[in-house]
Length: 356
Image (tube, rainbow, N blue to C red; front, side, top):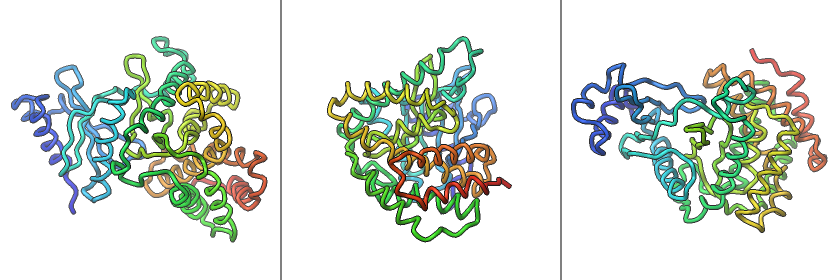
């Protein structure tokens, strides 16, 4: 099905804004004016975004799928349903003002342009708190989201898969790493036995209790700072899953490049917050955290490789090597000593990596 043009999306969004009472008819007619509408570039998403202004005040954000495929419309529906659910649970996500099921257009609260990533290592932003304080706030809210967000969560809302499991780890994480980085960037065939080692790790990681809400892309560019508070975006891939994955996503985030000491301090802080939400969660968390962190390491390298090579987004090229270094360091931990083929493959990748 032919995707809607930008003009058609704006017209549809104008109708929706009028239906919910956010714009008058004259304002709808002038929506294409440069003074009232500005397109926003995204990071890795294929979705299209606009900021709607009324005079000098932002009214909302328009988010629209790139096309009208079943998957794209399902993702939009998931964002609407999951976002409203999280907001009702007190999670700091943007308000959702409206959704059009035919086009997949969503109207969000505008949280501005300042991300957690923007204030890391920038003390000159004196109007804001130190980045470490935002991290602790984000981790406190993450622990609450993981527990409260799972309460009443309907798996039918999910557009990709309803639960984090072995299949997802194999296809979207280790498999993504092998396809996008090893075969795509390196141009190499997958050595015999590597997939089997990845499968074994996934089976072990899947033993972690998976009855928590999982954001699955919880990193510093998906945490906005609005009114000096953290707010979470890009939750449309949410599903049920284990605790360790999201906190690993934030702490090993290559955009932020947190020191190992900072990661350990924040991990300890997060665990204290988790225990206040679920006192019985500590033992399982500690048992499975490194396995889940490895899965996230693999996903990051795969995603950055794909976005750089296939989508042509040069922004991600600089982060492939740091992500690969973090993966190598993770594999050096004693719990991964029994996976020599994977460790060798990553070492070879680092030695031969050249972004062309």
